Figure 1 (cartoon, rainbow, N blue to C red):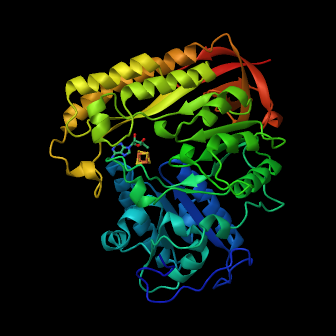
Figure 2: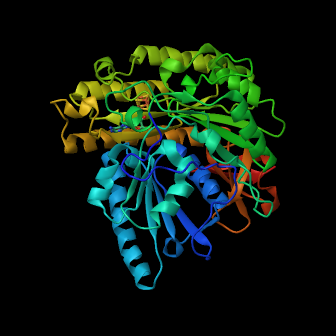
Figure 3: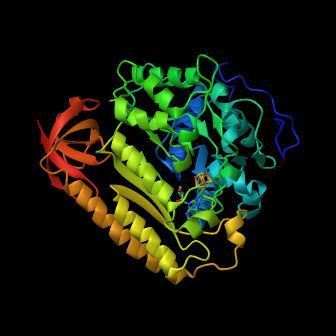
Length: 475
Ligand code: 5AD
Ligand code: SF4
């Protein structure tokens, strides 16, 4: 596809991301507020957008009232998530009017998956929006925000451009005066999905699978480590389908990439999310056995326990195949903590089929899980299926499922009491003198410790477990 503004007559001036600050109209420093909805990939994208805008002279502000540019980085995965965006825009419209009364302009930009999925429809529903920008065009945000601020019709940019946004976004440098990065960082290695589960919008909003090259990922990881990062979480909508070009020109698997990154001095921990059962290959499973830096935690969605429902979802695996896969993973790394995603009330799901989901959860045992009521998404095949499950039925099933999952999570946390765990201390905790970090199993751990220890991995004797976190003593 070409690189035109899809609904804007003016041709785009190419921006060179490395060419320094873009010229700004007006002399006051510009302030940007970025609000992120949805998944970790959006968190990562928001950071990259913030860095690109900083290059163009913007400073980030935590207060939306002060912002000359507000970016909403949105999520379209379920209806509720998408609707949140419109109520947020409603609030911003009032703010924009109030700021205009005192002579301040506010540019409202909608980014992320709602932008990609709904495009011009957003501006029709919410005319206060000045710019709609899809996830593949973030390298053009500074230029487009500037243009949107000059008034005129809203700009809609939702093409899948030819150029690589990662290459065009500024390298992840931090100004010398900036504080060090948080010890744990996200790093997107793969985007998009070719799986086409029948309930899911991702293949439409994020496009086909694309993997970054190993060299690009390694360079970014090294830069992050130089800035104080000790843990990276490799991100992708379907991260274990990673097949980026290696230094030898051949496609590398995620397992191979992880082994390679584990050699980076100072990179103590590696995680990755989200994986598809079909792409869990031997090399990745072996990495869980062999690579000490790869944390014993795996998010592996199964969505439903009934083979009929799994087939209707186009999941490309059965419940037994999932069971066998988990057995292989546990053989490689017996203490691995498993997490999953589950949907209840997929069209046509009977009580017996829902029971198959409960059975699978009971059998596997999860440390953690996300569960959702099926939400019909426009344009996806399942949305048109006749036998939609009633809202009350879905809520009731979700409650039963979540009661079981909470029980399992509590049991998993409780099982850590009395153990000594390595904890990467990340930030101040709720109480003075306390820090919070993560165990290898991704549990938040609260511990009394000096603030100077942030970024260090320490041994913690676990003393108590709650439903969502652990507490312990520094050893
Ligand atoms: N309805 C409910 N849950 C969904 N998910 C994706 N699409 C839908 C939908 N239409 C869930 C899946 C996926 C997670 C990110 O969101 O469980 O793994
Ligand atoms: Fe959506 Fe995940 Fe299925 Fe891809 S594999 S279509 S991202 S649920």
